[in-house]
Amino acid sequence: MIYDFQQIAALGEVRDLTFSGPAELVGQGLWAAVVSRGSCTTQGNLACQPGAILLGQGSLTLNADTPCHILAARLCGSAAVAFAAALPAEYYPVRGETCPAAAELLEELRLVAQQTDASARAKSQLVFALLCELSDADAEQAPLPPLVAEAVNHIRHNYAGLYGVEELSEYLGVSKSHLVRAFGAAMGVSPGKYLTGVRIEAAKRLLLHREYSLEIVASLCGFSGANYLCRVFKKETGLSPAAWRSMAASQTGVGLSAEQALREQQLYV
Image (cartoon, rainbow, N blue to C red; front, side, top):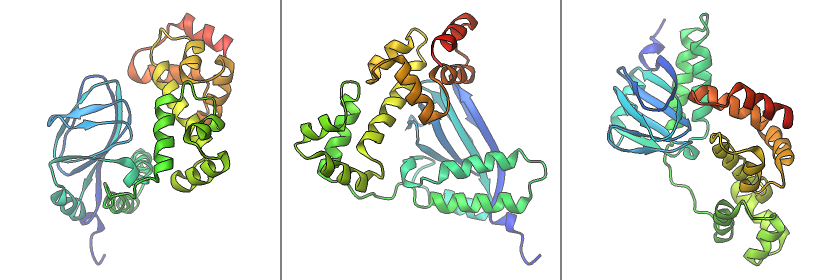
């Protein structure tokens, strides 16, 4: 062997954490953690929202503001040390959209860490790829065109009562075709698809509140009814709302009673 690649990039460990109070990431090296659900703050009171990636050196203490899930990897080797030394702060949250492949690489590291026969070389290659991806973290992005920025803002604030793209284009004073072209070019998805995504994310948040029936969730998120919500939700997530709520409840430790879950499964498929 000409050189030991693990001296450059190596995987220390992977932590898959769901927590509602404090949680710790302990160990020397560079921690890279993606917040996939909920929000938390570091001991330095830095806020980490869903989609954010937290970078930090050494041991980290996190406090959940809402039930939170993170996937974290401790990266070791000289490349990780150099990366950590370049951080502007000991704990540094970055916008996930500036390094979009980071979450996928963390998931690959989680999977390879579970394989007893996975080679050290495969782990090292993934760690180095993750460090390269994170090197663009928080890079400045070009601002959205004014029309698209206004459309995004209107969708996010009025998704529950917004009839559709036609109503949105009328509000913005442009034709539907022009809005679809401009929005797609800037955002990579159509305004209708973006609106559906915002509604689904809102539905997920409401589904965590056990007092809300699916009819109420549908009406609060802009869907015409519970059955339509179920069809769209399953198409977008692969799960029915009842199944997603059951899964989320098992991860956060709070859930429906067996009787309630059975009744919802019978009513909404």
